[in-house]
Image (cartoon, rainbow over all chains, first blue to last red; front, side, top):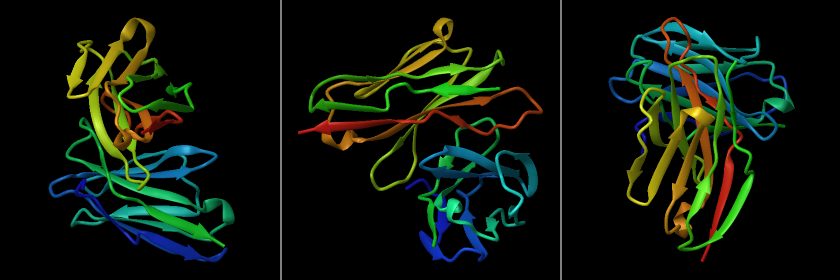
Length: 112
Length: 117
């Protein structure tokens, strides 16, 4: 158990819908990362927050957004969902930006 | 731009055999981190090791060992006396260290290791 909690574990939704994925980082970790894992793209970095501020953006679509709250938990919002958004979404956290990231168990999103 | 290549898509070995997973990386940075993560069938990503680019010492942890060679831009991972529980997808990853740059991980495509009883 990495200490990073992601909810829900599984999510099935229809095209065009909006969903919110939630992440609670390890206690004390200030940095939160979101990654997407799909069969065709592999593991792709989406976005990073550090102590509430956005630090870096990767291959994140405009239909996707995220935020980190004062209690350091983070949410990833996915809207206007398409079939191609079906993937495993990971949250990871680390104490700083200079240490290894620990990953949650992921949320498996299926868009039908 | 950074890139991590894991040329071995799938490897299958019999239990107790040694196996080496290859990782080759590309980066323009002189300082960086290298990582290995394991993804068992249950799906979570498990951190195994982090190595700094300025520390080329090899590392051994139980049955696991890592060989970092900056001259060939490689960071290979060896499992000695493999066990069925080692069956998983293994990912090599790279991140920058330099200030002002994002610290996200660039992952390789992974190597599926199957250890047969």
